[in-house]
Length: 39
Image 1: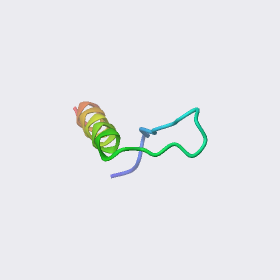
Image 2 (image 1 turned 30 degrees about the vertical axis):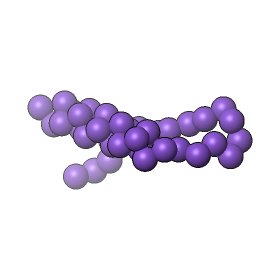
Image 3 (image 1 turned 45 degrees about the horizontal axis):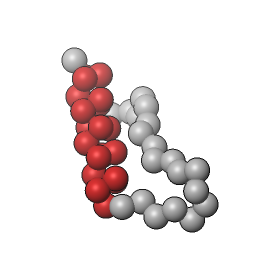
């Protein structure tokens, strides 16, 4: 389907490293919101 939104990870600190856990949380949030928008 078409993209209708986005989930982004942002940091105020330059050079911040995003952990795999943070990425997984963002993926889970995106999947949850996507499923909510399907209904």
